[in-house]
Image (cartoon, rainbow, N blue to C red; front, side, top):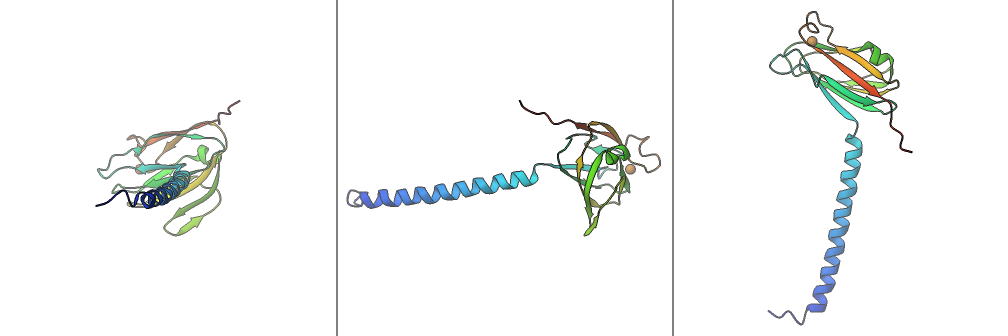
Length: 158
Ligand SMILES: [Cu+2]
């Protein structure tokens, strides 16, 4: 093999290759940034779990007032549950609730999730405070199916 003859060619090809790799890498970076932005305000809350524990997972969430969120609710448990947080709902602006190809708009105070159900609640909390969350099925809150939603004010940097 002779390397010396093709050294000019090699550096041209290497430069081209470098350019292509750089373009590819930066487009990947842009794509992953866009994906990260799309996912940023998603918060997942499970109502119960597959072993039937009467809890929310997690049982405490913190949101920022004036920021829009997508709450991804699911029920991996064998029984029906409710996501009930009336004061939180009253202090929030609900853009929509989407579940099984049905989109609901307007005031929402609680969501019922049957076993295996999933729902997306797109909302913007408007007022800071600590709001209680519970499942309104008889006996579930007493057994521990409660939680809290903390809404904090946005921190403004000077
Ligand atoms: Cu329940």
